[in-house]
Each structure stands twice: as structure tokens, then as C-alpha cells.
Amino acid sequence: MKLISISLALCLCSNILFGQTPCSLDNSFDTDGKIVSDGSRTVDCITALPNGLSIITYNPMSTGHVYLRKLTANGTVDNSFGVNGKLNLQVASSRTEVKDLLYYNNQVYCCGTTSTGTNTYPFIARFHLNGKMDSTFGYNGYNYNVQHYSYNSLAIESGTGKYWLEA
Amino acid sequence: MKDFDELMVTRYHSSGYIDGNFGNLGITTYTTAASGQYYEVRHLNLDQSGKLS
Image (cartoon, rainbow over all chains, first blue to last red; front, side):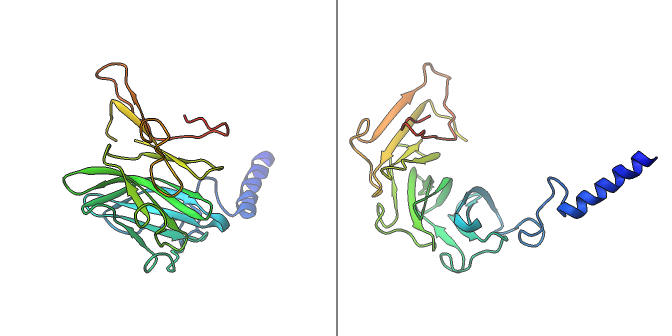
């Protein structure tokens, strides 16, 4: 009985000490440990930025274009990012979807697939941490390649800044 | 994800344009050994020696 009482006391103490049971949602993020945002979309990519910030992508379920948002460490949407807290990245006319997302040298790179409704292409894009496209990169911040359908993954050479894409 | 019998790796300059000095005009292609075989690649890794996997 004494052993059981000590075990229960230890369990209670651990909850008091750590304030959170293992694998539970972190309620300090947003208000309940999760963000529900932008209906009819799926979150596919997230990349960490310095100071606990992150960039997250919301791909469309059907036609439409990807939304990107910047979140603070506590899960608040940074409304200074893009336009009203959102970068709406459109490459071709019908659909744009991000497959990979990387932070490198104070800029964010993403790649994926884009469609006119008739033809589908892979694309690569670069934007600044304020959610504005980098107009010095490719054609006003993006480039695409008509020889395939999708860039699924992205890697950047730390020495040269050149990058590799897999389709 | 759609499967392909051909895997393409493309190298770009930091300016956003294809590096034509790599492979065939910036692109190298790997084809599966036989029909009915497909690649499904979801992640590309570049190690410190510059090798891709």
C-alpha cells in the first residue's frame, strides 16, 4: 500500500512539474495546440525559420493556388507576411501545389507542380521572409520546366547556392 | 503520388535558371530497368561531399 501511494504521488508530481502529459497537444501553441485554417485545403509542407518562426503551405484540394503563411512560435499567424498574412502563390492559371519547402540564407524556396488545366509543369519559386516574391529569381520569383510534371523534392548546395530538383 | 518510369534530376543556378553545364542541358535522367517498374521518390538529400541520394 505504501508503494502504491508513493507511485501515485510521483505521477501527480510529474504532472505538476512538467505541466503536460507526454504526447499531448501543446496548449501554448495557438489556444489548444492546433490551428484550423483555410477550408478545402491540405497542409503539406512546413519549414522552421530562426527564432521559432515557421512557414507553412496550404495546398488546394482541387483547382486553386497554394497559400503560404508565417507562424510565430506561439502559433499566431504573422499578418505582416505577404498580403494580410498570406502569400497566394500562383504560377500557371489553374492550380499550383507545393511539394517541398526549404529555408536557406534568409530566403524561402519551394517547388512543386502547376497546371494550366491542360498542361502540367514542375516549378521552383523563391520568396523573401516578408512573403514577397524575389523578383531577381527566374521570372519574377519563379521558373518552370515544360519537360516534366512535378518537382517533388529540393536540395540546396550550401557553398554555391545552386539547387537540385527531383521530378 | 503518381509513379514514373523515369526519374529526372535538374540543377538550377541560384539565379533561378537551369544550369546547362549539368547533365544534358541541366537535366539528368534515370530510367527504370524494365517496364512495369516505377520510381517513387519523395525526398532528395545532398550530403557534405556533394553527392545526391
